[in-house]
Length: 228
Image (cartoon, rainbow, N blue to C red; front, top):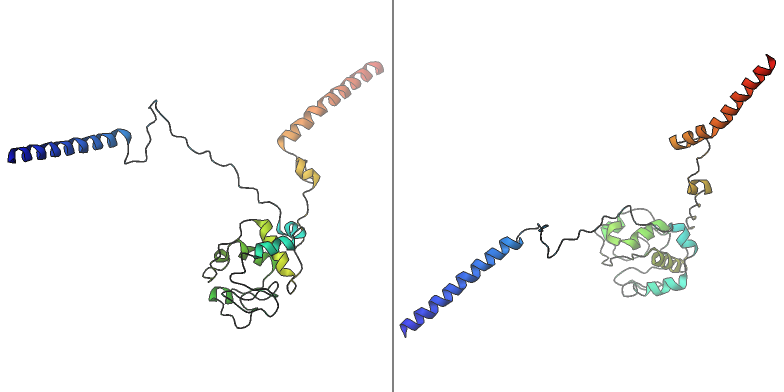
C-alpha cells in the first residue's frame, strides 16, 4: 500500500515538474511576460494603429449652433436633468438648484437658499452662453470640486438646444454672433493683397514674363537695323 502511494506521489510530482518546465519554456518562446512581439514568425504579425493626422473637426462655432438651436429638442435633452433640477418659475430646489432665469445670472448665486459648492460660489462671472456651454460640456472641468456628478453633454448640438430651451424660462443675454465665413480668396489659397508672393508664385510670374521680354528685345534689334 505504501509502495503504491509513493509511486503515485512520485508520478504526480513528476507531472508537476514537467508542466512547470513547459510553462516556463512557452513563456520564454512566446514572450508572454514582455510587451515585445516577435516579428520573424510566419504565423502572425502585430498591427500598429495608424496615427491620426491633425485634430478632429471642431464643427460649427457656438454662435452658428445657437442660431439654429431648437427649444423643443432642448426640452427632450432637459429630461436628463429633471432628476435633480426644476425649471418652472417658483419651482423648488432639489438635489440641484431651480434653473428658472439661470441664463445670464451670477454663477453659483441665482437660486436663493441653495447651498452651492465653493467651486461654483467662488467661481465668479455669470452664466453667459459661453460659460454655460463650457459647464454643460464638463461640469467638473469648468468648476473642479463641484458637487454636480453629471458627466456632461458631448454633442454641441445638444448643448445648444438645451440652452435655447433654458432661455425660454426667464430670458437670457444676447447670443454670440455666428463666426463670419472665410473669404473666398482665403479658401482657395489666393494671395492676399499686400502680402509677399511665395517662391512658387514668383517663379511662375518670372516664367510668364520671359516671352514678353524676349519679344521686346527682338523688336528693339529690328528697329535698330532699320535705322542703320
